Image 1: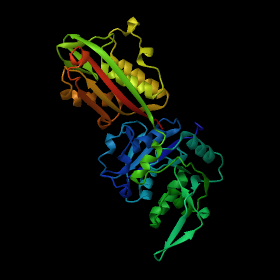
Image 2 (image 1 turned 180 degrees about the vertical axis):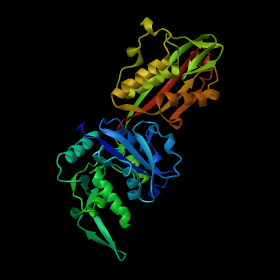
Image 3 (image 1 turned 135 degrees about the vertical axis):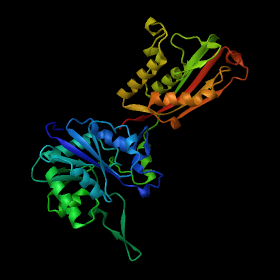
Length: 385
């Protein structure tokens, strides 16, 4: 990307998404550990030439403030309108066309835009002054029929193309085109139509089939086909008389303590091994050997943070975890809610994606005699897109 070209980004997010059939607007539905809107905004927020990101939301929107990007210095929230064109116009009106020469407009619910494709689009836009904007299209693969008088008439699909975003325009041109569109009262479904209506020249470029738009609830399942990284972790520790133990980052008072080289948080140990296994990495003993004096009494949170950093380098993050804690004492179930809260903070996933179950060994073996504790963990990962 040409870092000398300043870009303003507009993301219209004021729609209700009625076809999605959810209790809240689809842009606020979860996609992994983030909302769809958070995933979309994250595409642009770290690009150096992006100066500001305008997000147009419904005036009564009560959810935007809960988004992770809300207080980012590049983010500006504007009131949307009754139509898409009105929402984009409201945002575009705030842009200084002399300072920011280009405006990029992207659907709030296209979270799978690839940076390489975005770079290609920006390079194409900046490559010539012969056009005032560009927009990506892809050919249709399904057969088409047109409904006329309750009849479904076959049509040639080669004559039809699907328009995508992002669409990129000269700032002054799109501001003028949107103003003309508002004044004319014409209905347009995207900004390219407004540009053409105002007699500006726009160029069609090749789109990307991975750049899907979420319209129906089933659309969220598409990218999950190749998401199948699962790992298992198991850990056992002896117990001894003491004053309590730390499990899942929470201290539990007890007349027992865990015998361990580190702080003995067996839940985080098993969980870290499950995550490392899902990522195709070594176990925690490789990264934190108990023969190293530096690991004596080490907080297991450090072990988990190291695990998450290793996964981040592989562009992986936790999707969900399932834990089973086996011991006679202390009683685990009363502490499960606060343990899930702690793990949610550490893993940056929803509490609903964390399962913690407790059971006993029914008096059998060392654990059943109250002299030990075990944890079984299963974790799944998702790719960071």
